[in-house]
Amino acid sequence: MSKDNNPVEITKTITIQQDNTANPAPLGLMGFGMTTVLLNFHNAGIFSLGSMILAMGLCYGGTAQVIAGIMEWKKGNTFATTAFTSYGFFWISLVLLIIMPKMGLIAAPAEMAMVAYLSMWGIFTGVLFIATLRLNRALQVVFASLTVLFFLLAYGDYTHSANIKTIAGYEGLFCGFSAIYTGLAQVLNEVYGKTIAPIGTIEK
Image 1 (cartoon, rainbow, N blue to C red):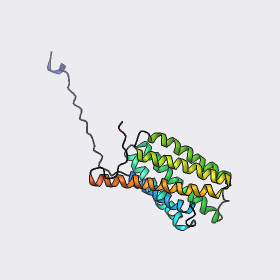
Image 2: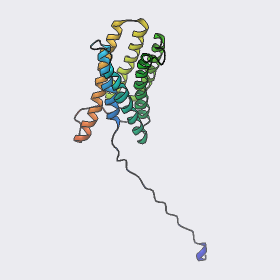
Image 3: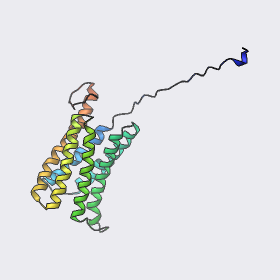
């Protein structure tokens, strides 16, 4: 066989790029959790709805969660991308539903429209809760309690029951604080390099 007929060897080089970006989940969880706690202080009747809650809804609950969702997309995390981006825009839409009628830009939503709005978010959250069954116990608590919260709020609007809305407020406080715990636990565990605050990781 001549030299020209020798087989040609092709060498492929595969480069694996390590992900050195930070974990955005605590940012999203804190944005959701702190804003949820403050709103549900209002729902529980502790103080009235004011500019502080609306500002938190736009900035931390809304914008920060959307940013966290985009960061999770970069990491290839479909669940977190969907959750953080969706709830970020939920907060923004909720604030707009409150302030646009006050500004005379559009009529306030009908009560049944708000029932539908809250119920759809409850259904969405319930499906995400099913996904958390493969993640960790702390997230299961957050999404289970959030599902209950949405349906309690929807039922409160449907029945015009102040008692139901108050109950929803206290349940929402539990939900918000559970999200805060989950977010801060991830920060502490990463900083110390060991489990400081357990989140109940599930082995897959």
